Length: 116
Image 1: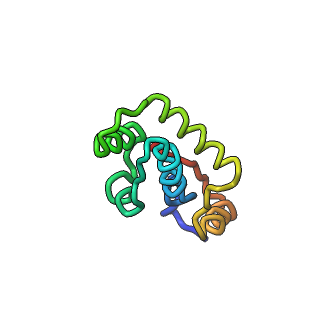
Image 2: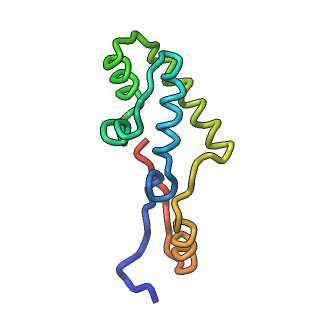
Image 3: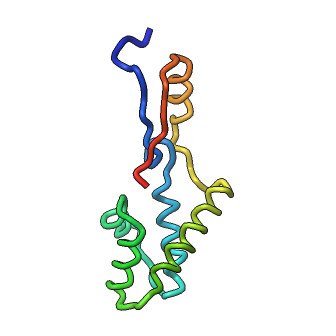
């Protein structure tokens, strides 16, 4: 028996269901490479993880003294991210499937959420 303490679950996409941040890191660097900008992985996770795309592009352009096309970069990065997701490059967090199956087997409703 599960008990009365768990009536439903809200599952966040980033970091609970999938490691989307890694794919974001890759796509930002691919788009920025045309401007000869590379974001080091450690810098990305310390300063950009969880922030918005506009902020990341603006900051990368400013730190590298580059006049980039923000609208084009935003559009192209989202297309590239979607393409990689369709290709199966989004990694599911280890253990998620088992946890989700447990929720289902205990008839606990679950919804998926994202801050994006």
